[in-house]
Length: 505
Image (cartoon, rainbow, N blue to C red; front, side, top):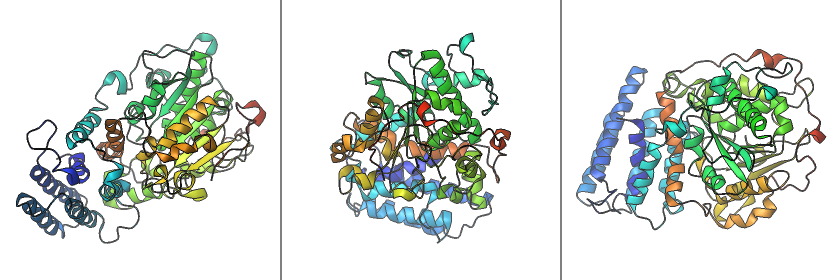
C-alpha cells in the first residue's frame, strides 16, 4: 500500500459519483474506501515499529467501514461525502498525532487536503471526474522520464577561457564533482543559447525541476518569446544537505552565464528559494550576472512545519531528512544564512533584484503572512525587492483567496509577475499586473496542469517517506561559512539597481 494511494482518495472522494462506472477514467468508490482501510492498517504497522500506540486503530477502521456501507446502500450522497471524508481525516490525524493536532499537521499535507474538500469549487471546473483522474495519473508519471527528469544529462563543457569551477578564492567552494553539477541541468532541445534569456528553475523539497515546473511556470516560459527555461534536477530530489543542494544552483547560474554570454534569471519554488539565497550569499560573484531572482512560496526564515516533522521519534523516522531539519526556523543553516557577516548583511535581505510571492494560507511554510512571513525580504543592501503577499495585494479577489503552498505556482498573479519581472528592469511590479487578481488560475494553464500542480506536495511527501537518510541533527556547516571574506557588493555594480516605486508588503 503506497502512501500516495492513501492520500489520493482523500482528495478525489468528494467527486466519486461524477463519472459513470465503466467509462474511461472512472473509479469505484468502494475500492477507495478499501484502500483507506488498508492505509490505516499500514499507519498502524509503522507506529508499532516506531513505538507508537495503536489504541485508536479499531475506531478508525470501524468509521471507514460505516462510511463504506452507507455509500453502498446509497445513504450517503455526493453532498455528504466531504463531511464524511473530513471525519476520516480527523480520525487519521488523531491516530498519527494524538489529540494535540495544532495548526501544523502532517507537514501541512493533510491541511491541504482539507482545503480541497472545503473549497472544491476552487479546484473543480465543469470537467468530468475522468479528466481529474487522467490529470492525476499524468502527474504520477512525472519523474519517470530520464530524458527530462533525471540528473545525468550530457551538457557542453565550459570553454577553457571561461572556467569558473573553484577558481575564486574568496567565495564558497564546490565539493561536488563538476561533471555531476553540469549533468543535473535539463536543457531542452530548443534552447537558444542566448537568443532568449535563460531562466533556471529550481524546485522544492522532494521534487525535480522538471516535475515541479513543467505544468506551470515551465509551460509559461516555453511559450514565451523572451525566456528559455532550464530545469535543475538535483540528485536525491533536494532531500539531502542544503549546502550541497546550493552548489548545484551556484554552478548552474555560473554555467548559464558562461555558455550563453547573457544575464540569466532564476525562478524557485519553496526550498529552491532558500538554497538560491544561500548561493547568492556565499558565491557572491553570481550577483554580478543575475538579472532577477523570483521566489515562489519561499521560506527564507525556515518553517515551523520542519520543526514539527522532526519533533517526535515517529515523525523523525518518517520525514526528518537533512533538508527538512535544516529548514527549521531556528536551525544552524537558517541562522548562518540570515546572520550579518563582517562586510555584508545576511540573507534576510535581497542580494539581487528579487520578487517574492507567497500566500498566507500556505500550510507548509509557516509563518507566511504579511511582513512577518518567512518569504519576506528586506532591501538593506540596496537591490530592490518586491514582496507580494497574495491575500494583501488581491484582498477579496479570486487570486487573493485561499491559495495553498503549491497553488502559488499556478496563481494568475504569480504568472503575471514572472513575465513582468523578466520584461522590465527590477523586480515584478504589482501595480502593472493588478488586473490579474480577477483570476484564480493563470489563463494559459489547462485543467490538467492545475491538477498536476496540486499533486506536487504529495509527490514531495512520498519521496520524503522513501528517503533512507533520516537524521536527528543537522549536517555540519561548511568551513566557508566562517570565513571573514563574507562581503557586500556595490549596489551600482548589480543589474537593475536603479529601480524605484516597487509595490510590496
